[in-house]
Image 1 (cartoon, one colour):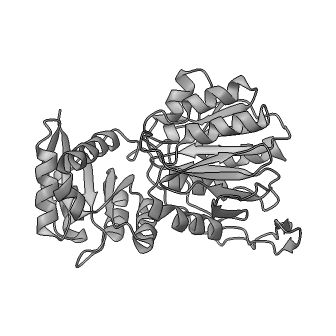
Image 2 (cartoon, helix red, strand yellow):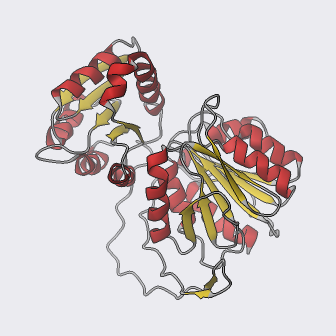
Length: 376
C-alpha cells in the first residue's frame, strides 16, 4: 500500500515540485496539499496521511504551532523543511521538540540542479519515517504541579582548573508514553574514561532527554555524534548547553576531553579521539555516507581507550555505529542500545542488537539515570 503524504507549504512552486517528486514514486501517494498551518491541521484530520511535509514560515499559522496541534489531535510523522542558517537550525530544533520526526534542508537550487539526487533523498526520507514510532511516542500532557526548587549542583572544574558556578537544574521534560522498556540489569560501576553516544533520526530530542539527567559533576568526558548538517551542530550544541547541567559545545580541533563536558561532532566533518584525550576534527570524506560518522568516532575511541569506553547507540536510520561498536566490544568496552519501543526509528540500535553487540538495552528515559549509576 502506498504511503499517503500531505504536502504543506505557502509557496505554490515548492508545493508543486515536492508533489511531483513524491508522486513519481509508485510507493508514495500525495493525498493533499495545504498552504498554511491551519489548513494543515484540518487536512491532517480529514485525510489521515501517513506522513506530512511541513514548511515553517507560513501565513495564519506557522509550522511549529501546526506540528504541536497535529501531535495533540492526530499524531502523524512530520518531515520539516528548513533553511541552512543558524536561525533555520534553531527553528528546526524547535520543530523537533514539538514532535516532528526529521528534517531536510529547503534548497531551491538543489531541486533544479540535482533533481534525481533530491528525489532519491526525499522519497527515502518519506518511506523511512512512515515506519517511525511517532504515533506511539507522542508526548503525554503532564499534570500541572508546582516544580520544586532546584537543588544546587556541585561546582564543576573548568579546563583551566578554576571552579565554575553550578548550573541550575534543567526544567523537566514531559515524559513520552510508550510501551515498557526492555529489561536489562542495572549496570555495574566502572571507571570509564569516555562515554560515546551515536544517533541519527530522532536524536536531537533523545540526546536532550538523556543529557538533561546528568549532574554537573558527571565524572566521564562525553562525545556526541549526531547526523546533522554543518550549519546545525553549533546551534544544537548551544541549545543543549543551556538545557543541561553538564557543559556542551561543538567540538573543535585540539579540544581536550574532560569530565562534565560533552563535545558534539561538527556537521560535515569527522571527529576522532587520540590516546592523550585530544579531539581531532577532520574534513568530511565524500566517500562516506555520514558526516559525522559514528563508526569513525567509535573506532578511534576503541583504539585510544581499550576497555574504558561506554558507548550508547540511540534512535536512527541505518546501521552507522555497528562496526565501531564491534571494535569497542573486541577491546572489552561496554555497548548499550536504545530499545525499540522508545525509538523514533529503530534502525541503528537494531543493528547493534542483531549483531549481538549490546550489553544492555534500555528505554530512552532510563539511559540517563543508568549512565549516572554506571559512572559515579
